[in-house]
Structure formats: C-alpha cells, structure tokens
Image (cartoon, rainbow, N blue to C red):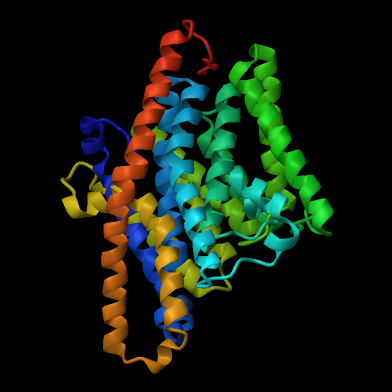
Length: 408
C-alpha cells in the first residue's frame, strides 16, 4: 500500500493514519517493560495497548491487501510486491537483533545454539509462530499471521472464491469459539530438535511447491497448488500455533477477513447487509477474551477506531499522522532494537526518577522516528521501486491472461 501512486495515497490516507496511530500505541506498550515495569500489569489489566495496536494493523491489512492482489489480478505481481515490501526491512530488523546479541546488549533464545537451521528457515518464511519457533524479535509474531493471510488469499484467489470474505471471517470466528480450550498446541513441532527441523523443512517445501504451482502451472495444477497451500496453513492454525494461542490466532484471521469484507461492502462488491454479519466478529472476540478485561477493551477500541476511520475516510488526515503510517512498518520492526538497548543500560527502571524516564521515552520516540526516516529513504523506498520495476517487466513479458485466476 505504501507504494501506491499519489492520488491513491490521498484516497487511502485514513488507512495510513490508522497505522500511524497503531504503531505509536505498540511502541508505548513495549516501552512499559524497560521504563515502567511497575505500571505494565495494571495498565494491561484495564486496556491492553499491544492487542489494540496489532488488531488495528490486522483490520487495515485485511481491508487493503486483497485489493492489491485483485487490482492487477496477478498472483506473481502480488508476491513480488509483498516480497519487496516485507523482507528487506525484516532483514534489517533481524540483523539488528543479531548485532545486539553480538555486542552483549541482548541474548538470543538458547535454541539458536542447538536448532539454528530450523529457526533460520522458519524466520525466512515468516511462519515461525506457526512452527513453534521463538521469535528473534518480540514483534515478529504478527508477521506469521500476515503471511498466513497472504497465503490463504492466494489460494482463494486462485480457486475463484476470494469474494467469500464474510463467510471466511465467520468460519474462523466460529472455529475460535468452538475450539477454544480444545485445540492442541504445537502438536506437530514439539518433541525435540529433529522433529522441529523436519516439520519446518516439510512445511517450507510444501508451501514453496504449492506457490510454484500457483505461479507457473496450468489451470488444474494451479488449483491443486492452491488446495495444498490452504490445507497446510489451516492445519498449522488448527494444531500447531504457539504464542499467542489457538483461539487468538484464529480470531486474528477472522479479524483480517472481516476487514476484507468491509472493503467489499465499501466498493459495492457485496451488500451492506454483510455488515451485520461482520459485527459478529468483535462480539466473538469479546466472548473469547471474557477472562481478560484489558484484552476485551482493546478489541472493542480497535474496532471502534477502525469504524471511526471509515467514517472519516473522506476527510483530510493530519500530515504527521499519515507520515507515521507511511513509516509504520519501520516503526514496528525497529523499536525493539532501541528498547532492548534501553533495558540493557537501565536494568532497574524503578530506581530512576519519573522525569528521567519520561525524558528517555521522548528520546526513544525521537531516535526511532529519525531512524525510520532513514530506513524508509534507504531501504523501503528503493526496495519497493525495485519491486515495481520487476512487476512491470513481468507484465510486459506475460501473454494476455497469463497468471489470471478466475474472478468469480
């Protein structure tokens, strides 16, 4: 989305504003541990800012990402765009965390010593949370659900069922409600280093084969590849999630497809009656989080925030807020690097006066935004430009209709 042309960016500025707000809230949540550890539990008991931020992100992704696939109608273009949107900065984040570990400011999970291949391969595919692999940086867990969403979108588009967003959202919500407390956790991957490596390798190979079939095969081969992709992701979601847990993961997918359904209502692809069905998704989330009032408030607030964004979508958004949305991916991935550094130099925050901690928080935000301006200029923009050039070349070489899935 951030690579959209200027007129499109103006039209979708409200989505940038939502992402900018969400990114700032997530930074605040993660700043509590190194700067206000005594306030973290009381705040999260009333309002969980982390869940609020990521749910707003998921709603925005659900709303806009399918449009980027359907606008061109090319799975290949979609994945080229996603690759150059996500992986370059992801690599910077991973390299930064490795550097912190190398200089002693942070420590890696012990499995990096005993299971380096499995952990590296799972991170390369961004599916580590569905493969029982500890995240190199704490924020990377959400990318596993983004990747699951992209793969399911690809499968649905290839099979021509991509417009069934409302039914898909309801199916995921129902699975979360009915399976809460019953679904197994890490059924496939738990059981030792060898078993984890086997599962990671097999899943990676199967998904790669399925995606290759979708990208390069004939009609029947594409359909088989799509079924393989969807089946693999649904299996992982059902029995192999680690953090945050089975019902949360299924609810996240329900939320993203609910965002897609709202996009279809907005663009006239489906009727306004679907809004009533979509409204059942946050209701299901509130019921599932009934034991965590802070999460309940976060769910309600995230949906109300998105509704406010929809209501104000034709208004001019503050430029500073849309800029935050523009660099929100950098904000999200890079703030752990700064906060881990703060925690290293401030091992006991409770012994530091409040004024000093507030100053440190302001310094973290200032340094983060400066760093994000640099990564946007030197990492994200060049990568997205390269992606667009590759898409243009691929489209100029493609025969008419090539890679087009049924658009029923």
